[in-house]
Length: 210
Length: 210
DNA sequence: GATGAACATGAGTAGTACTCGCGTTATCTG
DNA sequence: CAGATAACGCGAGTACTACTCATGTTCATC
Image (tube, rainbow over all chains, first blue to last red):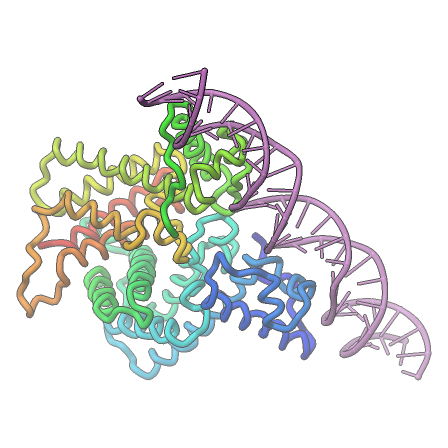
């Protein structure tokens, strides 16, 4: 896996096409799912010939990777806004905000339920590194969250008798669990089962409690 | 999705072929991953013509479903053995045993790292119900674990002021988290990162504490 | 030894991802 | 300006893939 994009458009028209392709891909994902997705249909929806799609993206994996990238930027931007407005004082409040933003995006952003930040689940080398050549997808997300949460988690150095892992790792684990529980919540209920969403917050608060 | 198997073999020779196909599939998964898997190559490895594969299995999804089924039976059998030997007194001990068995299988059973009990991650109708037509995969696993763990979890009825969900749901959530953390553990380290495995136990113990 | 069920087979069908050579348009350069 | 260079546009063609099905063979049972 190299990058999610083969050639970035620089001219006006092709930039619009680039975005149209991503939008068509996202819509289709909601309609036919990952396995039902075909490049041909994405191209048809986006009203571009198939060759053009392959000018921008190295293939289906790259297409999904680019979509995941866009989702992550979107998420980080919106969460940053919420954080500035709310100024959470502890990890619990941060967790709530992050989960609420995820839920909001899941309800409103097309295709988000399938790719979110790249965790389609197929654990091949190719698709794990959709977002980043070195880190796996959720790791890239964790990295971004880490910078947002810096102040609220404890320092790295710690009491050797404390069984808790270093906070970066704890965040990584928390993220993996949140991903799993929230996916379940939306599998059970298309709007996200409220009990499971609440339980996700409770579990994370308990685990990350400083 | 109907069932993972189209026609169960009854005669000797075809039963051997049936198992050979599953074995070949499992091996190949370890070598080329889910996206690299082809029916043709599975058939070649198993030394059966392609038509025979399709006599038994409705397709690739079914093949993986049958493998997941076999894995689950295997897991439940081995865990039952461990439970009888150890007679755990609380949920924590049970969690440890289950995780240790999962880790052991992940290290020794071909293909287990990719399909385990069916959670390949592609959340299409087709692959979610590999194991069961009604419940999703992990739900089927939770159901089996529930019968094994019956005595150790609290009763269903509970104090309305208690924020914890009913124990069946708690088990379901715990399973989802364990799946996520352990997959991470084996993504980081092919033998399963010991720190992450330990942390998985700690998180589950904390969450399921009665 | 006859009858039906289970089993065996692989060329053929339909559909996919992705390429590549060539034509067109935009942008730069002197 | 003109000419050169780069970005963009295109879709028939290639090389795969999953899966079928008609036809033949072996087995269990009476």
